[in-house]
Length: 112
View (cartoon, rainbow, N blue to C red):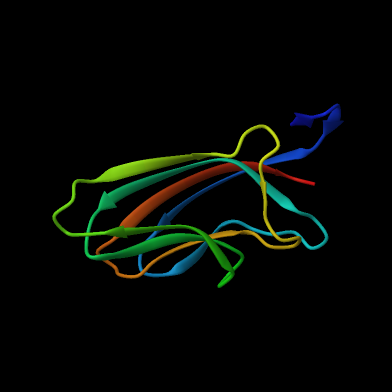
């Protein structure tokens, strides 16, 4: 991936998240993960929350409350060409608060 005339290693992660905290894109020691684009598909809905964090148990930067009577839905987070920087060495993690809430996460970014 080329940003301002420099080449950076592009990275992609895809994960199914349900009642756990799972890595979507791992962190690399000494590198910063920049997220350009994230899609979130919510296939099964229950009463609960889903969230994306900067590292395992890290800062929450996206959170959604759902209810069992809502229709399945999806979200797109677009952080542009330069991306959203996570904390150096941290990866992208996702979690849901209940096993009846299923998220499919696809994320694109690069390490710098």
